[in-house]
Length: 152
Image (cartoon, rainbow, N blue to C red; front, side, top):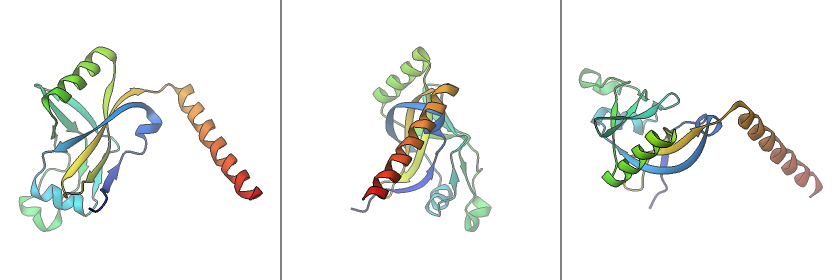
């Protein structure tokens, strides 16, 4: 089986939020959206998931139009329904409403069967001090790795 192929990543998510839990969600897409994703033309940097009428929707995700299907194309910024099991959805919505969490898309990828999936993170926002601490920790790890390489 081929490994999953990542199409789009939200690199800032791990900097802006503490990711407590991740889960895989399906995406309800049109054919031209899937073709565009296969070309790697997606951006989820500003995207978020929201509950509307008991369903979870991906908002602000940009999937570019697929040029050969321009006549029958799709709106690049349209809301897309996320497909989850009812139990997963209820658990997530309970945590988001009660405990101040938010749902942040981390990546869009194709699984081994070739189906587009969204890696969704249950996240809590970081304070400025937390971000600075993470940067210090990352710099120290890099410096430590450099020192170890220089000694060997």
